[in-house]
Image (cartoon, rainbow, N blue to C red):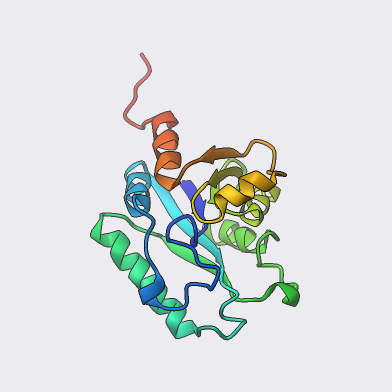
Amino acid sequence: MKLIILDRDGVINQDSDDFIKSPDEWKPIPGSLQAIARLNQAGYCVVVATNQSGIGRKLFDMATLNAIHQKMHTAAQQLGATIDAIFFCPHMADENCDCRKPKPGMLQEIARRYDINLKGVHCVGDSLRDLQAGFVVGCIPHLVLTGKGTKTQEKGGLPPGTQVYPNLAAMVDKLVENSPSEFNIAI
């Protein structure tokens, strides 16, 4: 199985320092949903792993988070894209849970649910914590410069081997271009 793990805010949709608190505030980054469709066409199972401390902060509730994710699924499907699953951490940083990135608990749960070793799985984020969580479990880290990505790159300290792209579409272009096709036959 080819699996890819994407952060949500700043990778798929516009980010906000005030949190995405309603479906109306969820706006896709241009080209991101088309990039997910290209991943699907290349045989990737697309999974989202996102910290959503707005739940713990009582900025929005589970019904609102579900409505935001339904809007994302619908927008993706309208472009021929499928997001196979969304994993999220509802906790605030001071709750010291195992699932909040940069801790690897959420990604370990993805590995359990999909019965897959994450070594070599591509993990895409716009913040250091996204990359750290993936790196610890063996993922190949990819930083996109959308969302908080430019600030993350400027701060430095990226995990070894982190590849940097202007956005998800550029990352997917490179990934798909370099992926061996199941239709290629060695002669």
